[in-house]
Image 1 (tube, protein in one colour):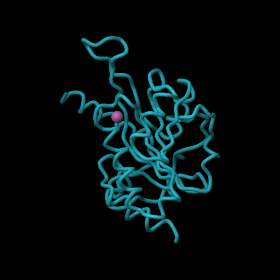
Image 2 (cartoon, rainbow, N blue to C red):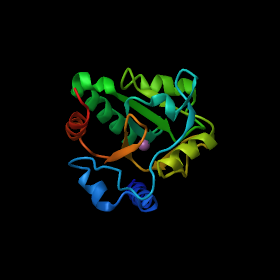
Image 3 (cartoon, helix red, strand yellow):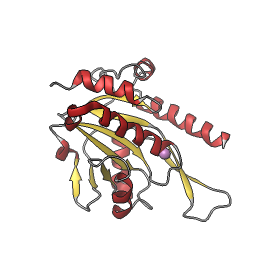
Image 4 (cartoon, rainbow, N blue to C red):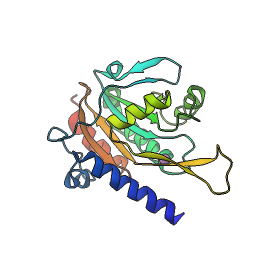
Length: 204
Ligand code: NI
C-alpha cells in the first residue's frame, strides 16, 4: 500500500514536472487560493470530444458560459477519486446560488471499465448536475493529455485481469466561462478553500 502511495505521489510530481507550465509556487500557493493560469507557459486544457452519462457526444465548447470544475479519475478508485468528487460536491453545496455558474465534470481515465451506464450511476452519487464523461481510449487519452493528466494501469499481482487500480494525478481544474484555464486546486484542498476562491471569482 505504501509503495502504491509513493508511486502515486511520484506520478503526481511527474505530472507537474511534465506540465512545466504550472510552476511549483503556483501549485503550492493554490492550497490557499488558486493562481491565475494566464502566466502559464504550457497551455492547460483544450478541445476534447467525449460522451456524457446519457450517451450524448459532447465537446469542450458545450460547456462555454459557465465555469467548469474538472476532475480526472475512475469509478473503481477506492479512495482518492470519491474523496475529491465529494469535496467538489461539498464546495458547490456551500457556494449557494453562485454554484449555478459552475459545472462539475468528472472525466474517466479508465474507459475500458467506465461505460456510459456506469458513469451515469456513479456521478449520481455525488452532485445532481455533475457531468460524467467517458469515451474511446483515444478520446480519453487526448483529453488527459490536454490537461497534463498522468494515468497508468497498475495491475494487481493476484487479481483478475479486470481487477486493477489506476495510478493517476489528482487535481481539480478550474476553467473559465471562456473555456480557458484558470488554475488548479491540488488534491487535498478543502471545500472551504475552493468555496472561498470560487466565491471571489463569480459575480453576483
Ligand atoms: Ni482515484
